[in-house]
Length: 92
Image 1: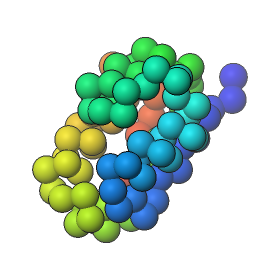
Image 2: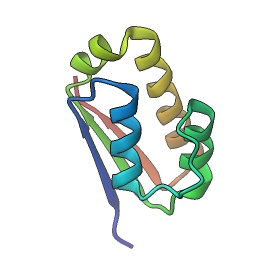
Image 3: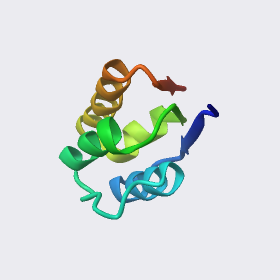
């Protein structure tokens, strides 16, 4: 089965993050665009296998703020750890 790849780069806002991940992973219409919904949707509603590649994360951390960036990264890491068909590739 082919792997869907979601390429994130130059993320400067939470809205942009949601836009990119929604478009690239074809998130369902009921995705609520909040952090809880992000976890729920990525962990159960998105068909795998898929990979999230996030480039230029230092810029994203600066633009999003360290706390929000850390929360997003934690959500993505949790989903990757819980699902056997999701990988996360972070590039600083």
